[in-house]
Length: 297
Image (cartoon, rainbow, N blue to C red; front, side):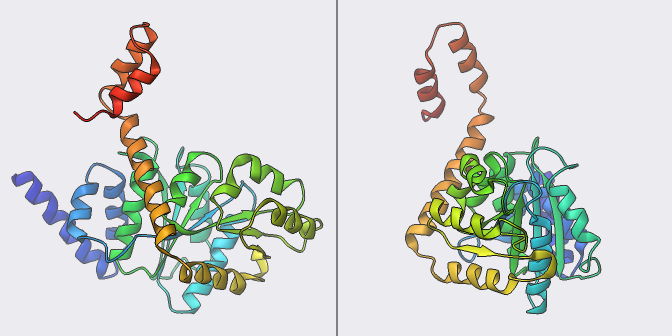
């Protein structure tokens, strides 16, 4: 009990410091929500005022996600918004998302106290990506950040999990080279609320836009992020998507979030190893094992 009280007091001190502008305190709190002190932090900040959501930015490597996010941060800051960026790499702190964080730190936002950049390597942390990201978003909103951008590497389960907390999910693609077809094969079009063809001054951009419009019913925009061209239109599309939000869309996101959280917990369920052994040894079939895994205790 004394240890719990001490931990809560430490979190309260960090919250007070972070709300006073301490980036170091905010960083330590984010470390806690990635680990086993998450529940203490969430209890300390209290319930969210509404649904927790962020702007998801994803796409294949090399599509220009980092340049796009840099341009978005600049535009939101020009409008007086406080901005946080979560660069999520579900595998390693040395690739993908971490590189994005480092790149933004070296640009015009390095000395801006109202821009927070955080690289999150969630493998090995309690609950994984599905648990860590919603908690981080909730914390950042409690620290009065107006905009939270969540970037993922564009491959794997992370896109499905982030789409459950993102409103909207923006998929960045390059022109040509069959990007529209590859995106469809990778499942990126399924999570997209907005599709953006970056580097739109390159050959093949118009064809990529046409291909995407044939493959998907969501809005398709063009962008030259390195020059800031098309950023205003992208922000308007993001805000328009948010204005059009409704109960059905919110329910779909929450359904995805609950399922992702449940899956994360099932992966670490204490009974899983024994059930796998039982199936391997032929004493149980996978269907029965699955029923036992989700059966109430």
